[in-house]
Length: 158
Image 1 (cartoon, rainbow, N blue to C red):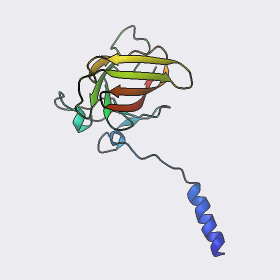
Image 2 (image 1 turned 45 degrees about the horizontal axis):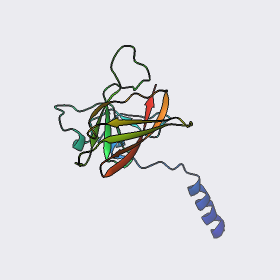
Image 3 (image 1 turned 30 degrees about the horizontal axis):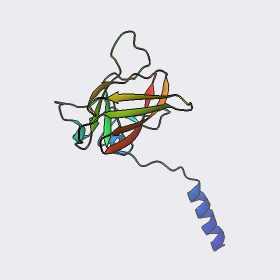
């Protein structure tokens, strides 16, 4: 009976849903509102991480995505990102690196989820202001590379 009870506990423990650990951007203290899409990276709408607030005055709340490794944040000024914008804001993204880095470009290698479609974009001078337009709607997996750093995130384009 004792073996059966232990087996039942182990089986039930294996059936519970595993929830991924919250990233700093998704924690309630850092960002009270987080929007999940079918993509893996949540879009937070609360304040930017403290290390990404340089140049902001007052409330730094805005849509943003934290890199999977926590080394970069994409502050999205034209949210939601869109493939076509006949009127209105562009797909402006301010890339902010957590660490000071040597000079060099930010290279964005993007892959459209579920396809072989890839695109490459470059932000001259490294993380900073950019316009990142991608050709098709969907979930784009981004590998971001800048001097001495690499991080990843997903961005959704409508």
